[in-house]
Image (tube, rainbow, N blue to C red; front, side, top):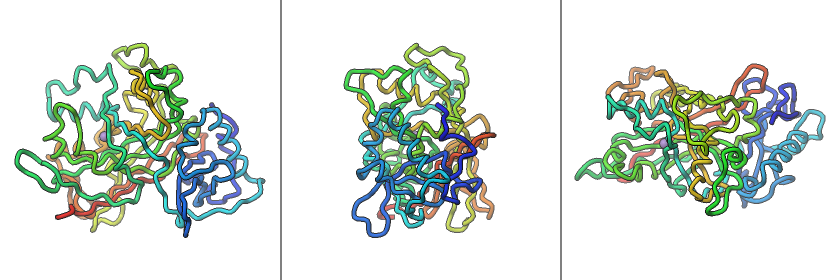
Length: 401
Ligand code: MN
């Protein structure tokens, strides 16, 4: 629902929030958890321009789980109250520069599920392994996912250690094929009781907001272990997320209808309303010798085959309870064009076409010291830009490497 908090003319008394190109204008108001200075306990804050506003007048606690558990209507009321407090003309409040805040995970994440919702990604990867029959027969009927590992989800800025693993029969050691995956994450809201599905018309009420996800992947480990049960240790060594929860309300001006499917879905998966979001996602690389960030890819979340609403409805369709603070991720976000490929596996076409960097270096997979930064933003004529912030991780050598 569009309301006065989305008004593109709305300005804040925080000057840096009114700058064009800012990720966190007053129309965004993402929530996060941080520690500043000698804080003993983490606290909840709101990003505004270059600053963080302490959210304690509205929200207490050391995580956003309680906020995520609120009914969607209360989360919307809270957005209105915070928007008013930060609007030009309201009394100023103390702010903390973002540079002085150490951002933590926004929630205590109980469960993490990773989908495979980009048909472009699924088709590209399928084509590498099955040129004649790239898309598996179930793809257009059932949203595919696997249960990931919540314990290794880390906030942006946390270094990522190259994992050890079984690379093929008889070989154990540091992965030689470390990759990233650009994904959108969604933190779940109130959720459902055991045994009670969530109808698709209600499923968005159970999404508190979104973040960036880098689903680091060890392709050699993955290739050797994934059949028949799917990814396991190739993914669970680390998953990086951006620290700011950009609410679904903030994304409202960027909602659009999902591209029509050529294959009808079952009624429980039929989107009740426009359920796609136009969010641009980019991946950038810095290496020990390439210090200017080099853009690896850019794609839009609007090109996904399955919507967030469909993912939530499907996840709960068997009665599996979803809980506040659970994280789902979309799967690699790729698009129809070459520049839209959201991981190195696709960009190098399974390690056969290197990515050339501006200084003459190239990459088939990531090397120690490389840093991958994901960014995301929504831009549409007539509306304020909504940024997702950044999700960065730099690679450390393997533990005995
Ligand atoms: Mn993934």
